[in-house]
Image (cartoon, rainbow over all chains, first blue to last red; front, side):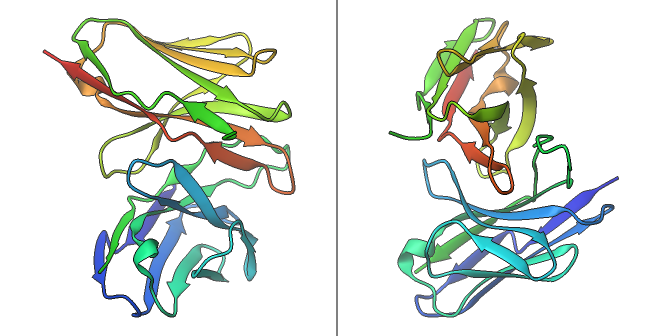
Length: 116
Length: 111
């Protein structure tokens, strides 16, 4: 069976510090991978998605970047965190479906990031 | 206008009540529709897909009206454990089939 691991669960970082959140998927290959952010009381905002190693697409301009160094590894980074980067970060994956619309997403357990 | 809009609630209902959530979407080219459930500070989990013919899973019934671009979720015989935020999700066709999440409707079931 497939599993997704995301860590850490909580993180408190000072403004201006770097960030690295890691996500790995097991039990599948060639997954589509996603990073979402959820601000308090808000919906999920898609930050990045990846359809393969080294292939990253960004949905919104921001202070963050993403990388996919291996097929089942997705990393969210920042060189200098801002207060506005605080939020609940979720990694997600879905099977690559050539038909196009088998869109069920499976989420990691999330990282609550507080930038102070 | 938001791509996916939901009444944020909260909906406060007693156990055993029937409650309905609505969701509207703006993109008429939307292809797939889902309801996800999210507990506080947890990841969203798929509750059910929504099909044009409507579908039911136990106490949960989902309906889709493509003409009105409207999705609904009905929960019958509410349980305390149903308390959560319910997210409406719509897939928009494109380079990779983008999922758009609503901000969610919060449900609180009380004894």
